[in-house]
Image (cartoon, rainbow, N blue to C red):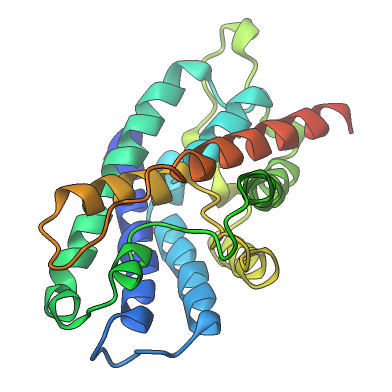
Length: 250
């Protein structure tokens, strides 16, 4: 399996399990209906654990455009591979979201709440305040990417000017922390910082499923809230760049 296919599979796994736990909690007549925020945050942490475990030895398990961009900005990942990683992650996110819909199709049909249906695809703010919502996504993603950079350490820096070529992919990504530690990191971010925006902290986890929501024939669905959609994309990218910048001077 090449690194781009691994990123596609890893991101699809992430979204299938992560959005799957949201569907289990918010859709009607599921076994997990109304089981609450702790179940969602723990489920997302375990989704990251499984996705990273599956592909960390192949692609490094970025499974997040913000992680890829942050690592490249910090000199730990070759810019020449960034576009391929981002395309694979977005396609994986789209596939994962479609699988969630197919898996829970009967429960989408049994649910009248169109906001709940949208929540199984993408994030939305608890209180809509674009400036503060953007800040929330910046801070949450900063914590994620800075932790990855600190775990990777200076010995894993990619020297683009040396002509030596990229380091083995398994040294570069969420897998640098380890599958279980990074799952616990995302669990902590969700518990502590997720209450304002639902902690997208990953454009492929939000934008790609939002596109799926717009495309799929979901009964009784609402609009896909495109006016908010830029925040879970721009916020994570800015947070990753801040993390890379601070890492470079500390």
